[in-house]
Length: 276
Image (tube, rainbow, N blue to C red):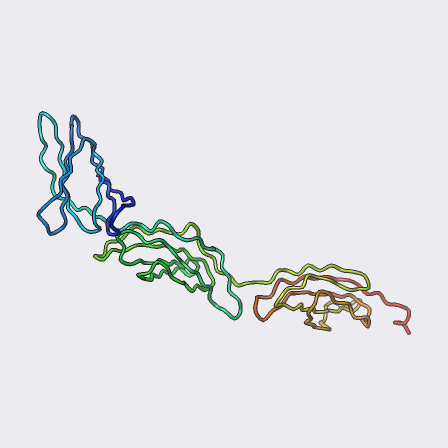
C-alpha cells in the first residue's frame, strides 16, 4: 500500500488522499473501509481499480481492505492506521537568495510569504544555519513572516501543522540563502596627463590614497602620506623627493566594507636641482 496527497477542493480542512493497494490475481473488485479514530461507523468504497482516491478531513483514520471475485471474497485485512495530514506548502512567493548587511545593520531582513495549505492550523519555519551548523524553528499562524539573518548560509523550509498536530512534509526553498557584508568594489584607476589619476566616484564612499616612498638603494618603503578624498580624480603632489613610489587606492566608507586595494608603482628620477 502507498499513500499520497493531492490538492483537494471544497473545505480548507479537506485533503485528497490516494491509497494504492497491491493487485490481487483474478480480483474483479477491491473494497476499502475507512473510519475515523474512535468511531465505529466506516465509509465504504468499492471499485475495480486498486487505487482509491478520497477526500478526507485532516485527521487520524483507520482502514481495512479486501479483494472480491466471482469465486470468492477474501477476508478483511486488519485495521491499519491511515493519516490525512495537512497539505504541503506548495506556492511560495519569489525571494532573493543573496542578501547583504552593512556596518550599521548587522542583520538582513528576509520576508517570506506563501499560500495557505489545506488543513493547516499553523506553520513551522525551519531554519538551518549551515555556516554554524545550527537549527531553529519558528511557529506562526500567519502565511508570512520576516526573518532576521546574520551573515552566513541558510537552508529554509516551510511545514504545515494541523489542529490535532499532524504535520506535512517540509517544503524547502529552491536554493540556500546567502547573507554577506556589503563590500565596495575594487577601484579602477586610470592614469592621465599631468601626473593625475581618475576613477569612478561611488556614492557613500571616499577614496583613500596612501603614498609610500623608498629612497634609491634603500630596502623598504616608508609611508609618507595618507589621504581621504571625495570626487573622481587626484593629482600627484609636485614636491616629491626622487626615489621609488608605491601608491595604494581604495574605496572606503562608514557604511560599507572597504573595497580591495589597487596598487600602482612608479619611479621619480632625480633632476639637476636635486644635486645642488
